Image (cartoon, rainbow, N blue to C red; front, side, top):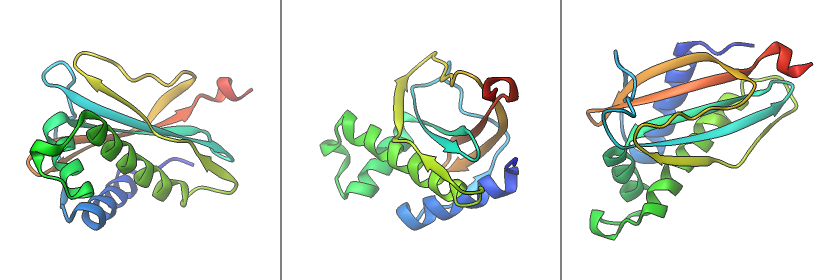
Length: 153
């Protein structure tokens, strides 16, 4: 099974709106780790379908998300709060996409990375779909990776 951009966008709209009250819109550009500090989080899905879902956003948006999720003001947010918030958003997006897959499928715990000029690589997978979005005036990118057929053998 392959996810469509529309399915991924709808899941992101639902998650961001229900958790943070934020709207998400289609965009023309993906998050660029070479231009700004970003936070990236991914969850892996295994079972009847093998792959991963990765969420990328600029650090200021991740900070805003942490404030909204944990009810803290910006001065009280620690780096761990920001990472936890983005990990939880990736977990919710992955969980909603997992619900569209054949059973059984299992979701991993989130992995989070932050910084500039880095690549998040999931060995044995290839990009199935990359969806550029905009939220709160910031770019957000959701990438679905699927295990390569030869990696499954």
